[in-house]
Image 1 (spheres, helix red, strand yellow):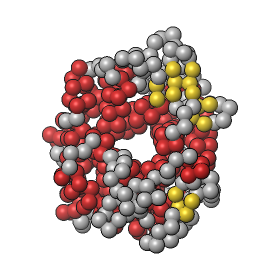
Image 2 (cartoon, rainbow, N blue to C red):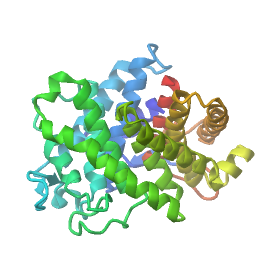
Image 3 (cartoon, rainbow, N blue to C red):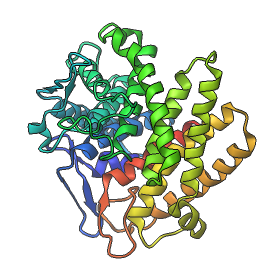
Length: 373
């Protein structure tokens, strides 16, 4: 998957990511999809992280050249979307911004800001961005925080900040995960901390506590798409890590919510039926759900292990192993004589002739977590 990301899915003429690859045609092509373009930059940092931490050549010829290519594409993508950020005109928090809609060519959401922050934090950990570079991390973080409503929910679109249901399966979870990555990065990296507003860090955990009350209740009271579980589990697993042990009751409630979300993933149709079969006619759809779900499930495994809940660890580990085998099966669907697509996910099934980069990105993220677990 790392090789696929760097060799097949980076346009060397622009250092930007392709979105589609077509194994049957031997071609890759661009498609305007900003939130997934930013997600590709974030996923590329995970590919780089794996290539560095594996301490082998990962079976990749010219690994160093591939690493430079991924790093350059990540930098180029983040810098492109950072151009002329727009102010968020909300009275609660001064100085917040969102991404420029003239650059996005679509309505700005907290999801866009979140994926840029996630790509930046992943890249900065790897040294792709230095502390003094003009990336508007402080103002984008403030922009997300400014979108939190009195209920604890986050408004999803900057033009209509009171609209919290549009994209609720994705945007709030992405935004909260980004807030926690920023919080974690500020806490761990003293070289960068001085360039970020201390008040931003101090605002994040109280915002997450308010959000937990809303979103955990929303989960209990509504039938929701499994994507809600996937992003919420990842966000609140990071929040769990940051809660002081002195707040034991609250920490227990958060851990229960994360595990409930992960159990819900295991009960979803893709996980119950496709993993039992070990293959799928709907490769794109099923791989996304299983790859994304595995990304979240590894967080649940980690939380269950911290709680010494051996029964849940065992259950999740079995599910994760089945999911990893499914991902390997999907990779094998690419014809051996294809010029592009090897290592990528999503090809095959009923008239599915393309691979989408985000499908492989989710699988790559999950497998990197499993590698570290």
